[in-house]
Image (cartoon, rainbow, N blue to C red; front, side, top):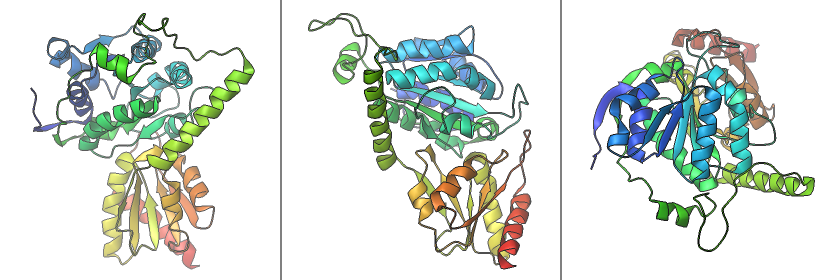
Length: 364
C-alpha cells in the first residue's frame, strides 16, 4: 500500500503521481511541450505493473480524446493531457463527452499562441476552456492550480467532480506551474474500482450485457429536436447546480482592500508578491484568486462592490478573464487589465506599476 509522503517534483510530475495514487484506470495522450513530463513520468513509473493503470501514447490528439471517450463510457477513471494547440485538436471529442455526459479528467498546461506559437507559458486558453472551445451549449468544470501541491490535489478534486456530475473536468494550468519544482504531499492511494463497483455506482456505463437489460448505448447524438432540447435543458439545470455548489476561490489581504488584483495560476503567484510590495507603499490592495474558473466565483467578487475602488485583472494573455470580472461587478467598479503576451512572464514590479496607474487614474 502506497502511503502519503513529501516529494520534490515538477507540477507535471505531480499530476502523474497523483493519478496513479487516485487509482486512475487509464491515461491516453500525445507528447507536446510543456506538458510532456506527465506521460513521461507515467511511462517511467509503469503503473500497469502495480495498479493496473493503462498508459498509452496515441497516434494523435484526436485519437487520444476518443480513447478517453471510450474508457469513460465504460465508467472508468480515465484522463488525458496536452498543451494549447493539442487541446484545440481535442475540442470535438470534449464536446461529444459533454453531450454524452461522460466523466473524465482533462489537463491543459497552457503555452503561447495562436497557432503553434511558442513553448513558453501563457494563459490564453481561458476562453477556449471556460467559454467552451467546442460546439454546442456545454460547460467544463475548470480548476486553476497555482502550485505544484494544487496540481496533485486537483487531480483528486477533478476526478471527484467529474464523476459527481457526469461531466468532463479540466485542470487549466500553465507552463510555469507545470515546469516549476516544489515540495508536494501526494494524496493517499485509492484502489481502482472493480467492475462490480462500477456497475453499482455508474449503472449507465456500457460494460456489456447485464442480466436485467440490454447493452447500454452511450452517445451524444439525438435526431429528435424536441428530445435534444430537453437534453440541453437538463444540461443547463446541471450546470446551475454546479454553479451553486462547487465555487472555489481564495482571498489574500482583502479585508481592508481598496483595490483588488484578480489573478489565477502563475499570474496569482506573481501578483501575491506585488500585493506585498504595494502594501509596503501604503496601497491597500488584496488578491482575489479564482480556483474554479468555471464555475466562476462571481457572487464572491460582487461582494466587493461598494468596497473596492478598482480591480486589476492580471493574466498572461490579452485580456480574457476580465470579461467575467466585469460581469461579476456589473461595471460598478473600474476594472483594468494587465498582461504580457507571447510567452513572456511579467515580474511583480510590472504588476505593481500597473496597479499604481489604476490608482492614479481613480484619483484624478
